[in-house]
Length: 242
Image (cartoon, rainbow, N blue to C red; front, side):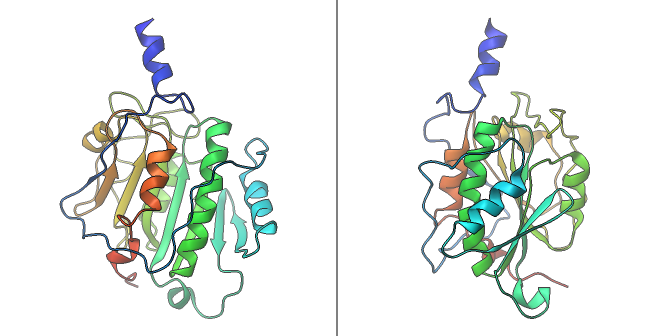
């Protein structure tokens, strides 16, 4: 029974998130400043979500949007950019990529996160970032993302265990060294998983990486409360180095 309750405690939508979780930012982080544009509002509800067809779902959000962005894909990655762009990548997206990776989550929770993150993505592309989303994140996807010199920030969302393990899209534990080998512009990892404070102690990270996490059980509200607050400004890490 105790094991069952422990498992239920980390399931989405049950309202068991610890009240007032504190975000931890590594000592080497730069002080985060305020964006000079209105932040996206948290969505009260999400339109219907069809299974794991994240690309079709996000494309539908774009088509229904009065200020759309371009939604395309490359393999399992979904790429959100400005609707019309001219110039080289390094000029248009001088701050690099913010990458949202989803491990093991149920469809209902995933639906809410993708809807909210679409609003965050629109805001980011206006500020000089390209946004990449991958709904089927595996260790291979994590390593390729972290090692890509375009990546500036990775936002990870999945179930987590009390011993700090996080689960990929195949419901398998992510290896402890998945985030270790990094490209020259990787500056921040934001982890939205239960017991991510333990995860931050268990996993290996590049020296100087800013790691943001929460204590105990947590959920999407804490993540998006942070992403839409004046505590987060990924531009503070500077432009990407070529």
